Image (tube, rainbow, N blue to C red; front, side):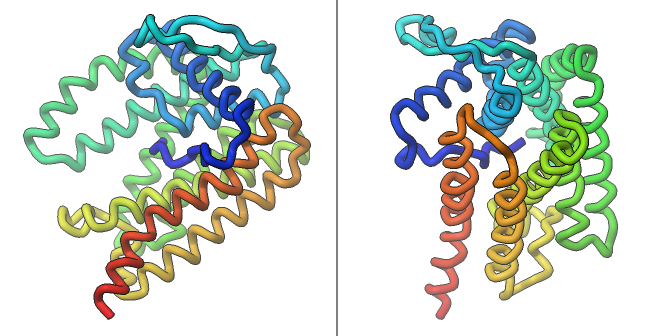
Length: 284
């Protein structure tokens, strides 16, 4: 994923932020243990959210314990103790998505950058294969997402919905398998809205770069109406996510999850769209 699912730290209680950090540090530790020290450089906020979400759904957090940071032994850390495989699943998603994003970046890059990325590929390929052995469904979903994304972007009739569908479907399927019956449908809808938001906010963030490089971006065809289209579609995705999330009976990490959905995501949207709003004001 892309690092857009973040907490709004200023609006979190101290104990909530400490709990969030403990999951972040716990995921970092788990990635190092299950893949390698180098895999920790891939750690993302998105997968930290995924770990928090899974532990909240299953109520699998078994408390917190102190330790030393694996990057800086002089720094003390608090680690979340997890009673199931939530951290391992989040670690697998993290390294798997990093691998497939690398494949996508290689196809979109120039000669020099492509050569540098190919040098990293063997390491990520090893991580991805190890994750696929333990969680094959994660790899299958990620591979399907990449193939569907490439197919959609090559379609001359590709619109916003078609472009956002692979990422939305990936996260929908990823969360859906964590439940059963009506609950799985709620999980799916939450993931679908969140996945759609992630794709659209990434496209909005990369718009200027994509225009300069001639890359695909679903907002390019909208011309002067881009800002309005961005706002409407991102707000709709957030609303879809919140409506589904609000149906969940969550106790553990509720303050953290509420903060991400209600404060963190809207703040990210505001920060990214602000640069286009400023340019519109300057052009008037």
